[in-house]
Image 1 (cartoon, rainbow, N blue to C red):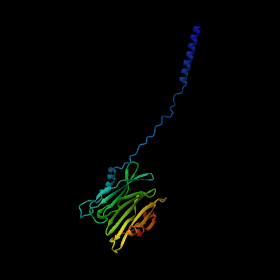
Image 2: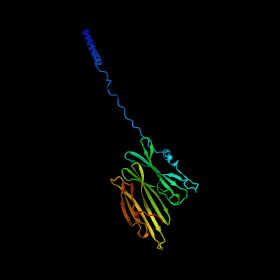
Image 3: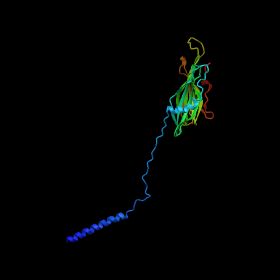
Image 4: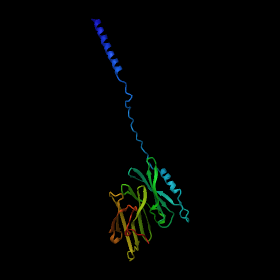
Length: 268
C-alpha cells in the first residue's frame, strides 16, 4: 500500500513538472515590434530678458554714428538718458519700446528731443524692429521732454505720447503721438494739451487766452481707435467750461490724425 502511494505521488509530481515546462516552451517571446516606452516632450523655456547690455548693443550702431556735439559754440555733449522699457504683444510677437531722451546743453527753445526705439523678439534674440530719431517732444533750454504715456489703440497698434513744451509770454505744452503699427513707426499728430497767452494782470485789458485739451482713444473694432479731444477753458471766470469737443478718426491712407486748426495753437 505504501509503495502504491509513493508511486502515485511520484507520478503526479512528474505530470506537474511536465506541465510547467510545456508552458515555458509554448509561451511566445516578446515581439520585436512592441512599442518602446514613449519619451516625454521636454519644453525648454526661452529667455526673453532684455538686459541693459542687450539694449546697449542694439543702440550702439545708431549713436556711434551720431554727432553728440551739434552746437559748435559749446563744448558740452548731448546727454542721453533712457525711459523704462514698455513691453507689449501684437499678434503672437513680443515687442519692447524704449525712449532715449536727448538733453542738449543750455540752449534755446525746443532744442532737445526724444528718440523712440521698438525692439522685437524673433524667437531667439532681440532685434530692432524700427526706430525714429527726433520722434517728438522738446522744450526750453535744451530740455528733451519725456515719455508721458503708452497705450494700445487697437489690436495691432500701439501709441506713445512724448510730452514737451515751452514758455514765452505764455505757456505751450503738447504731446507728440507716435504710432507703431505693421512694424513701422509713424508720427500721427501733435495735441496741444495746454495753451495760455496774454497779459495776466487782472486790471489789464490785454488779450488773454487760456485753455487745456484732454484727449482719449475710444475703443472700437477699428484697426486704430478714434481720438477724442475735449477743449476746456482755464480762465478764472469760466474755468473748466467746455469750449469744443470733437472726435477725430484715424486717416488710414496717410497714417495720421488730422487735428483741426481750432485745437492747434502756437506761441508768438
